[in-house]
Length: 106
Image (cartoon, rainbow, N blue to C red; front, top):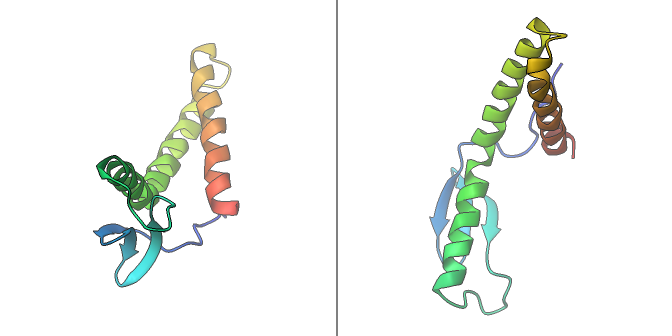
């Protein structure tokens, strides 16, 4: 049985207040700020924070896409075992698997 994501399920949305939030329904998944005590320092920081929030909000969908891609790579590797042209797919499958495990198992 494959491990499942134990965090707050997606789809996550973003909310802009004094800080930038990632939310699902009424639940806050993450609060992202620039690390200063007084909040945002300027537009550059807001752009970086907004980009970070968008990345975090996309995380559940990115994980799902990575898992689906890895299933396809595994099937491709299984059907072309011994064919050196598919060695890169096997390497990528292994790298993807490590990332998936990092997310799911900590």
